[in-house]
Amino acid sequence: MTKQMKWKISVLTLAVLLMASVPALAKDSVTVTVTHPLSLRGGQVAPGDYKVSWVTHSPDATVTFKHVDKVAATTDARLVDRDEKYSNTAVVYRTNSDGTRTLTEIRIGGTKQALVFEQ
Image (cartoon, rainbow, N blue to C red; front, side):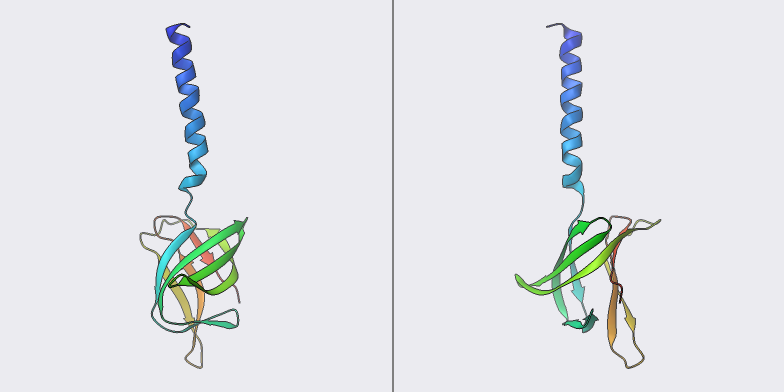
């Protein structure tokens, strides 16, 4: 085998490995702190720390909120791309006229994506 052929095989192998690792780089969970009770599609999310994970169905997503390894809520959302990269993960909510709060989105830190919860 020639030196040039070995080099081509090495480059091809590296390219295949890089392409295979791209899906592993996609973010599919974050940890958030909820500071107020939030309504979420008819349910409630109590204050606390949650691992929020999602499975995408392009662009829809099934989102699960886990608190102390127990599922606290599961709902649908839309994973949307934004123009600006978020430096931190943020929980965004709307304050309703009666003083309650409704979760509207989770901005995913380090990405240009947000999980949007449509009511």
